[in-house]
Each structure stands twice: as structure tokens, then as C-alpha cells.
Amino acid sequence: MKLLSKTLIAAISTFVLAQGLNAQTTICYKKDWKSPSTIETTELEGGECKGEFSFAQMKKNGWKLKDLKIENGEKGLNYIYVLTDKELISIDNAKFMENKYTKLEYNPITTKISNINGDTASINVGNLRVGQSAIIEHTYKNGKSLIVANAYVTASNANSSTLKIIPFLDIKQNAIPTSTRKPVNGDKVTVNYLYDSSMIIAPSQDAFLATREKYKDNDFLHADIFAAKLKVQGEPLPSKETIQEFAATQNIGTIFFVIGSTTYIVDSKTFAILEKGSLSYNFTQDEKMPFYTRIEKIEKNAFDSVLDYENWIGFLKTFLGDDERTEEQILLEDELESGALQVKGEIYNNYYKTILGLKDAAK
Image (cartoon, rainbow, N blue to C red; front, side, top):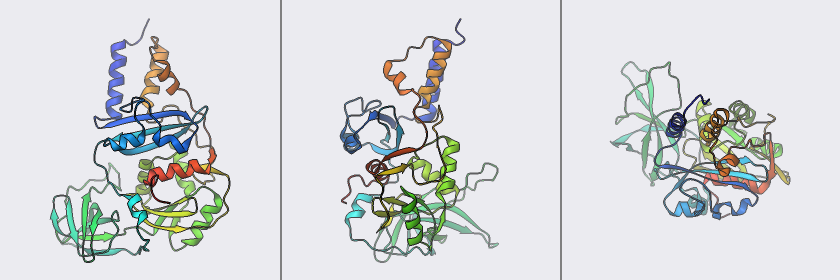
């Protein structure tokens, strides 16, 4: 005797789907792929890709990369692309890398905001990098101040810069009242906020130590703390969203990504590349994914991925009977191998280049 009807199971499936996705989001995947260098031009399964379109073709069709997950499969790597047609914070890192490199000063820059028009405003500070982030503070008559918004640079000339105002979500605490105050002309703006508080994503211990020594003026939170969180969450490979959320909770302003012989210094809120520099260290043939850490065996939770609803509904149907899944769905729901992922350097490099939008940038 069945405990739940097919109608109820379908309703549960619809509810879970509604919680995880919206009309502007689609998920495409490739299972057990063995050629990382060709993944972006290979037709992807699922979602709007339908086995007909590659990631490169989807971008041409107007879809934007919201997130990327790579998981260890039985015969290769499982790639999961989360795509959206909604406008995201879009910083063209590939275009930036073609320009002449100019060193960025990390010192906080404080000024007043002006010309507020909706979610845009101006500051009288020029020569900023598109994507540099800032906070906006309002000071009350009693001298107390409150951070009321985040912002980031969308345009800059020699004398001034344009900001886009976005919500301040760095402190997520339901027990603390949330202010509804909006920025007003005259509020204080601090550009490069917490840029000296950083974290290193590196493929090996030698790369990690070399980066920390080269940029020793920065205060680095050890990657072990991030890895410990990934272990608790059961996420072997961190997505862009996961990295950003962790950075916000730990008050990290910049992230140092070591890719090949280059260190990319990235704004943690916008993922804009602020600076790049060469790095010398002892290369190894295999790199450690997700990055160098002393935390061992970061395992994937059974129902913790962007396809969780598939696993959960599959579990219900198996337990309750009437397992009507297709062979493709069953394969997708297979338990993935867990533990630290040792990969060729090309895979590590391509993963983080894709997250940073550098996959097609000039080397």
C-alpha cells in the first residue's frame, strides 16, 4: 500500500523546484566528461540546453553564468552550469586583462555621495576600476553612524566616478532589526572597504606560502577556515556564490586566486579583478581541489547540490514505490565519489578561470 499518492509526490516536486529555481534560471550539465579543454564547446544536457547547445552557444543566446559546479564522477568530471537570463553584477574581467596593468592602491578612500538618482550616484573620486566596491554610511545627529548600502563603481573618469547602489547584506542576523533607510546626498562613501582583509585560493602549499609572503601587508584569513565550512556544508567544490557568502560573513574584502603563475586579486563582492601579478613557486603535476588546505576529505552530502530536488524526490519514490524515473534521472542521482579531488593543473585552472570570467581572456 502506498503511503503517498503520485499527485502528492508531484506537488512536492513542484514545490521544491519552485524554491530552488525561477522562470529565468536553467540548469545544464555534462556527466563524466574527460576533456576539460572542450567542455565549453560541448553540447550540454538538461534545461534549456536540451543536448543541443553548448555553454558558449548559450552565452551567445543571451544566457549568463550564475554559477558553476564541478563534481567528481565515476568516469570523469560532472559539470553543472546554472544559467540565468536576468541581469547580474557584470564586470568584464576578460576586457580588463587586455589593458595595460596599473597597480591599485588598497587604502580606503572616503568621500561624500552626490547626485543620487534611484540606484545610481556619483562621487568626486576619479581613476577607479570598474567593479571596485564601497559602503555607504549615514551619520545621525547624535554622531552615531549606520551602514545603509553597498555600492560598486560602474564608470570612472579622471575626476569622478559613478556608483550603483545595492543592498547591504553582509550582516545576516534575524535577531537584529534591519534598517529601511536609503542613502541620501551627503552620506559618507568608503571605497576599498576591507581590501586589506583577504583570503588565498591556491593550488598547493608552496603557492599559498609564496602568495602570503609576497603580499604580507594584507591580513589573510587561513583557507582552512573556509575549507572547514565547506566540510560542514558538504560542498567539495565551492561555487562563486559560496565564496562570496563566506567572504561577507568573515569581513573579507579581497580574494587572491592563484592560477598558473599569476595571482589575481579580486573584489569579493563583485568578483572584479583589481590587480594581477606574477608568482614564482614550485609547480606540481597534480593540483588539489578545491584549493590547498589542511582540512581532509571534504565530502559531498547526499542531498546537497543544485540537483537536490531530484535526489530527494528519487528517494521518496524508491521508498514509496512507483519509481518512474528515466535511466538518465537515475544516473544523475547516483552517489558521487567523495573526498579530496586530485586533478591535473588544467582542471584547477579552468575551474577558477571560468568563475572569474577569464576562460576566453588573452593569456
